[in-house]
Length: 323
Ligand SMILES: [Zn+2]
Image 1 (tube, rainbow, N blue to C red):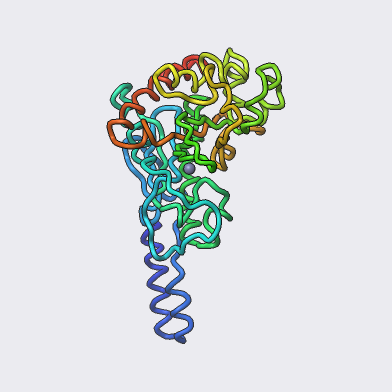
Image 2: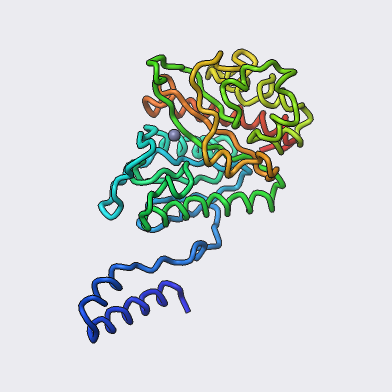
């Protein structure tokens, strides 16, 4: 039987049984919404859009071995979810729009798209780039959205591994001024290596220890280039973006931030990349500055076109894949 129909019948039973029971029964049971099993909306077909409960999460199945995730660009503030009481709550403005622009740029140039997972809830309600404890802070509706978000990513990863063996997960963010007021206008690429580790020389950093803890562990094993080259050599994502006019760290020109503040990658970069366990999907966190990239639709369209070119070269160089 159709699962939606089953849920409705269950709801009717609750309502009818409540009519004959005490008031207590009604208040408690009617409020407890039953969620569908995750994955009830499978199979995920390319070209369709799938939404989680109340459209808090949206998912675009793709046809390329790339997943784009936008956890901090949402603006929905439903009253059923109270505001989070601890942790960061700042929105990464226009990152949802940029993520969709990148999808469209791939479609225009290649006729194919990456998988895209977007959180529409404002960060005051959920943080989809934290573990579920800090991310939802005990609210079951936020927890449901968190689970859907990561379910759609996991489904995308499985499909990509089946079709391509390897792939890349990109977590899309935006950074503002540093705590000391300095605004670093470079894009920060996070590989789970902190700012002090990036300060090390190539020979100090090019070890199995750092390779193992980086989010591109598997990609750097598959690549004909060595770990440090993949991280900040001439075919690294940072250098490719640099060559297209978008200064990035790490890269040949900027191997590190020079010790200044930097985000090296959060929960998603760790959970959905290849650090330690060597998952076939590697990951990079992109922290985009606002000036020059996130201010208006012309900027983010130009940036998206550049990122597509950079990723085409990146996949060819390291995975031997023609996108
Ligand atoms: Zn963010």
